[in-house]
Amino acid sequence: MRALRTSPLCLALGFLLSSAPAFADGIIHHVSVGGPDQDAVDHTDANFSLVANQHADGTVTGEWTDQFGQGEGGIHAQVDCVLVEGNKAWVSGTITSGTVGGVDVTGLPVVTLVQDNGKSANDPPDEISFSFIANPARCTDKPDLPLNPMTGGQVTVR
Image: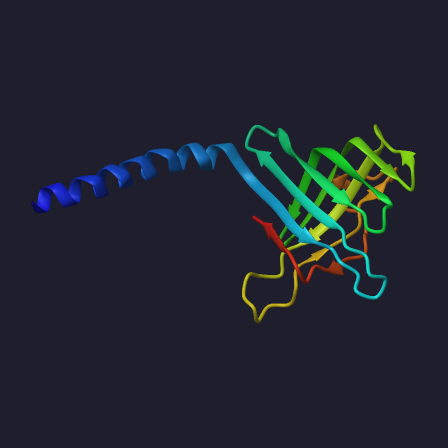
């Protein structure tokens, strides 16, 4: 009976150990953001979500969506650059669809900065910048973008 109980555990451990090198070789940096970026003063209710991965071979994959409040539109972007320094990540890409105030911004470059301040309720809130559209800076330029607290969401930088 003891051998039967141990077998599934050994099998699961074997799968875990065999997949660990594949994950380690695949993604060297992962950045994710999700949640509302609300402004209680102006009564805006918008959403920001981002997933970006930098792979060991140098390629970058990911996308982000920034839905602006008060009917001001929003964007969807394809990520082409990720730069991680400590708990900060600069991400840039190209807008694949979107409007700002009724103006089509498809095809324009976009850049943002996010900061992971921890996972504990005792940590300060994570922070995000706006999506800066038509900014010629790429993430590797590390543009000095203002950060705003993201009190209703979560940022992960690793």
